[in-house]
Length: 102
Image (cartoon, rainbow, N blue to C red; front, top):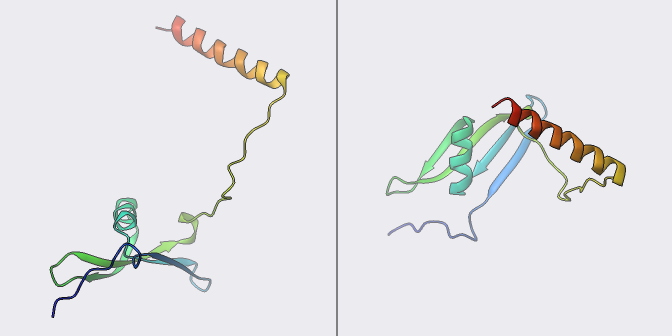
């Protein structure tokens, strides 16, 4: 009997935190996440393979300082007209200096 691979709807990533040792455990069967975590050098603690040898799931142990959670709302910086003018002048000065140093 052949074992079928997980569908897109069945694949996911789970993050859990162990306060006792200060590490996160990340279990994922999302290939995009596996490639990213491997590229970042996270410690792989477990790998499950399909019968054909391809990776099904990987589990990683990650130090707490490597994980951050952010607000889903992107804050837009509100500048006054004076602040906008000051920023513009600083950028123009940087560009002028860069051109004169060439």
